Structures are given as C-alpha cells and as structure tokens.
Image (cartoon, rainbow, N blue to C red; front, side, top):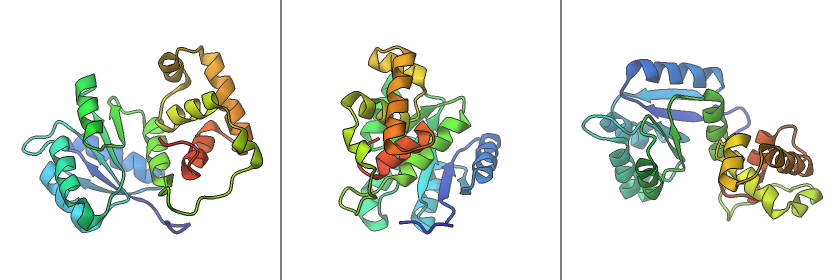
Length: 207
C-alpha cells in the first residue's frame, strides 16, 4: 500500500516528444510523478530500473512497438513484479484493442486524449488491491448494490461516460445515471468516480 503522501510514479512511453511533454505536464499538475521514455527500448529499460506504479504506453512506435514492450514485460514479470499497464494510442480499431487486452493491458484508450478520463483510469488502476489482501470496510448499504448498479460502476471504472455506458448496455443515459447515482449513495461517495474507485478497492467490481 502506498503511503498517504506518496506521489504515484507514472512511466510515459511515447515516441512523439511533443505529445509526451504534454501528457507529462498534465499528469504532474494532477499530482503524479512522471518520467518519460521516448522509445519502446528506453521504456522497457526504465520499467525494469525504476519500477513505476503504472505504465502509460503508446502502441505505434518504431523499432519496438508498445505491444512488444508489454510482451517483454510479461516474460520478466516474476522478476520485477506486476504493475498496471495502460495503452493510449491513435490505433482505435477493434483488432488492435483486442490484441492489447489479450497481452494483458489493463486499459486501452484511443486518442485524442481526454485527460479527465485518463486521470480517472490511472487512479482507478492505482487504487486496485490484490483480492487476497485485507479489503477496506464498506457501508452496509453497499452490500445491497444491485447487479445493474455493479455493472454500471464497472464501466465507470473503465473510464466510460454515461452515454457510452448506455450504448454498451442498451439503456438510456437517464437510466445509467439513475443506477450510478444509486450506487454512489449506497457507497457513501461524493461522486460516481469516487464510488467506482471505492468499489474497485473493496473488490465489489473488477475493472
């Protein structure tokens, strides 16, 4: 468990220097400690040496792609431990996303960059705890979460908007908001983002 005042270490693997600088500046402003690697090879070495709390990686990089970086990390996971891995890429096609997730990426986010969404995804992943660990206690009302409320919170934790969730679940946006707000109240959270993070940390959902 990270210390209360610990700034989570984010490794940003991005070959476009302007984009890398933009992402780093934004994440630093949001309270993260960010380091940058400008190639897949550089990112792989940084992953081993620095042991970041989370890796944010591009896919389409020369010489070593983001997919190849994750493949190599998978091979050496027992030696360095496992940390959340998030792809942020211009490759928005379904085939690329499936490949990334099959390799073990926790999230696959398409550009253009929505920093509020990226911030939520990073915080949700950092808040996740091992299922074998000691889980924080929940309000009694949280145990009464309905299946649809849990389903909606799961998609919230994955960074989806109400409109996107409505499309995925074939519901109206109003219905999604209704379930999200009910779950938020039961969890004693001020926002649905806080509710989703709390649900992830306590094992109610598995983002």
